[in-house]
Length: 200
Image 1 (cartoon, rainbow, N blue to C red):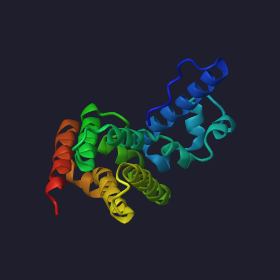
Image 2: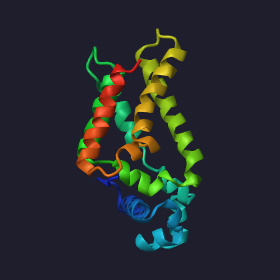
Image 3: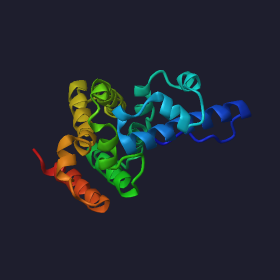
Image 4: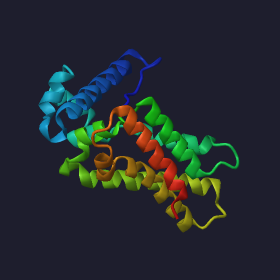
């Protein structure tokens, strides 16, 4: 969950950003160490050196701490917008995800994801809503690029693109990566992404 970075904000707004970042950092660390279900809001607040009341002025629920980050979808959309002419959306998303895996950024390690959130039943319905929101945003982007293409076909394409992300954080990916080192997991994940190009 990469936090917002304060730049030239006024002091009051800068303090708010720093507090929000501290909450997200504390939540991410605790979720990864112990799992979502085994961490309380009070523990997150204590780790961030704030009160529970203050935490709830920034986030409405514990669940919101998991889904506060939009950098993954924002990064994918930017890559789609800036891709060179003749480069397919599929190639662009695969390249972008591969780069993210290589950089170990965005809390995107597969084991870290599953250790933190993968088995939390409380998050499953919200996770499905997030995938749906990703599909909506990518469909909108594709429609802007290709208004002459029937919208249902672009929706199908968006579903396929989001499916690449879902594949990487799926239970099947976790099982397949079992026992692998982080570097080996990145290599395997990259191979899975590249293999999707040949799937009919």
